Length: 328
Ligand SMILES: *Cc1c(COP(=O)(O)O)cnc(C)c1O
Image 1 (tube, rainbow, N blue to C red):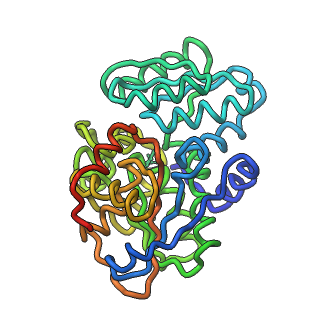
Image 2: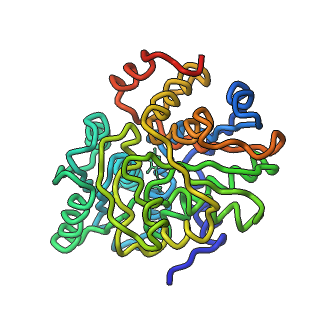
């Protein structure tokens, strides 16, 4: 049994100081009116590398031994984790190899190459990219940095929870995009340790929601990957999951799902109303409120929506913001 404590998140905060941004928490008046409760957006889309993943990657790399730093790191990633590992490794003058499946959009692949990492494109699922990475760990002695199921990665993402507590001590509910669960597990650990009464909710897309399906099954299960606008939420949680499954099961109040049409509307909304570029995965919390998949329980209880990244293909973004808006 692997457990993490608030102490691990405090330690991560020390390691992240000066290396990652403390992102703004922004009140959204329009969304508050529509939802019927005060809504604040935690803008991790403004984080360096365009997503929160830099927190976990930077913490994990900072805690490697000198010998491990010498050998370099490897990651299998749907994009944002790879980008974060590439950036964090480069910042330390380390070698990084990133493996990903052919489902990953071209803009994300290019961004990782531009950061100086070696990119390996293998197979059509995250699991296949993962197997290839495991092979290179054996063959070349690189250190594997998993995207979510790793104590230092989860603790790094948990620093967002500490920031939310400082920025809005009266926070009542937090909506967090959910895939492998590193982001949600870390934030939930920080918030629940501070105050059991804070409600934590994970939001996924209907298409291939691995954690949601696993929680219902009572154990980690495989799901079929499909095409989704929330491509950063793709992939399984691992049948041999060590941390995130139990943490999400024990610390999170509920998970909910949003459909593709509401994710499209939320990306559009974020641009037109909040004037922010966000990717599909990052828009699921906004989608839950706009589509009324989540109805706030009280008009006075503030809700924080974690907006997790902005690395969307700009062609796709242009298309989404050109479609008719259901919210205008
Ligand atoms: C990775 C990612 C998520 C999900 O994080 P998990 O820790 O896998 O649950 C959400 N949004 C974006 C933009 C991501 O890159």
